[in-house]
Image (tube, rainbow, N blue to C red):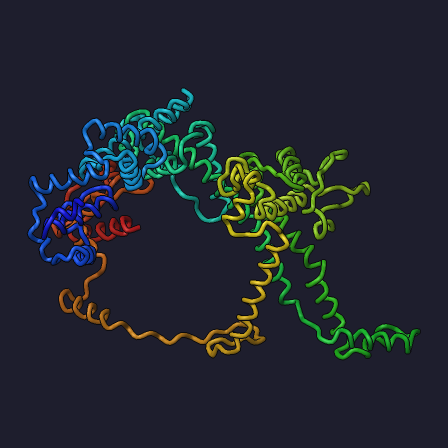
Length: 627
């Protein structure tokens, strides 16, 4: 009825206002907010020319009256100042404490307005309400987190920043804080010891496990990223409660991250020790290794010759019966040694030596800082780690003391049994301490990789029971229905096997038809791919290169990047991830070059360098900025 009472452009505009409001909860600011296809569709229904919309006035008393009619018809009302305050308070209490992304908070605000039958305020006012809610929510959450910190923890956190800018202590504190933010290096004993020192430094602050217990994980992660990006001088500008919350989140998350890193270093180190030992032994034996073919025929000939002349000598009967004589039999013996149990024992002995002389120091220290747990049959490995820890400082003893009950686990059985036990000078069977440690660490590595053993305080290597929802057992059927998986394990395995068989059969059928693939027995590898033909350079890329060459000649990329930075001043928004300050511009006779504000502060003011020095510093600083 409201639309039928209008005519011409007013009718079309009113209908569009009504439809836009019912779909978006707000009125369009003008014709530009209306898609052209929608305007044409509504105009055809109303039998009005779409071009008539251009004569409608989007500001004035007429459009205000039309908006009021639509609000009254739909039961909405305009947003007042009191409504905006209530919306901000509701957002701060119910949304902003767990959601820090402005676009998500904005969506919740619009949904709340629709539910309360309130027309959303203007775009500018919405932004102000969202910013106010985020600020109030952050203040509430940071106050709650800071209030749970112990006084000693607050003092230790504050000590990271409470120093003068120009004092030597400031630089030491900055280095200490930056070191906690740094990622781990490559796999080595030095990296392991460095990460252990970081973990002990973080634990010394003693943030506590209950500080963030009811705070959303994404909020804590956001605080951690924010504290990692900001320099100490920036962190000191925040209110005390927010500053404590930011640094506490950084320390707590870094503790979990460093714990994960140490577990990964343990796994990689144990693997490296074994791989290097095997490689070393293989390299030593490969020169002596000679494969002997036809060993069954050799055995038959030796047996036949021996039975034919049982009274004869080996040199007179056995050697002549074999092609190649004595040397062939020597090659058979050497092959067995290099491929049989003797080879494995040699690898294990070399592994033990490498562990004892170098890696043991780091791995033993890991046992002091990591708390390994198990929910399964791998508890004997945990007991064995306790045994290693108790005798870590026992000195250079070869065996465990007599009467000591050594926990046995699956890692010390099998191949390791031949080198684990040895008789002492009195003929007693004893356990070799270093061999036991190596076998236990290898068993620990295998158990960690399949999560049979987990680490307390880790994230990736946490208790596998925490990977499932708390209500998993009670709502198991619903969870499986959501995953669209059968409850019966046999049915699940059957479906998986069927899918794998179908895919493998499809691969097997397709392989002979591929002209670029060859599979055959060859020393370099069974699979061989034909080299791809070089693709032609895109035509537009050639044109771009030609135009760049015509305009500027051969210009180094670093100079083009420098000129771009000078024109856009984009480095004003760049800071170091480790909190090392921003990048500043420094003028020189030949133009401009960059240097870090920290470098400028420590070196003091310097005179403008010559052109060559300026260019060198420009390239060095540019590389650092790009990195």
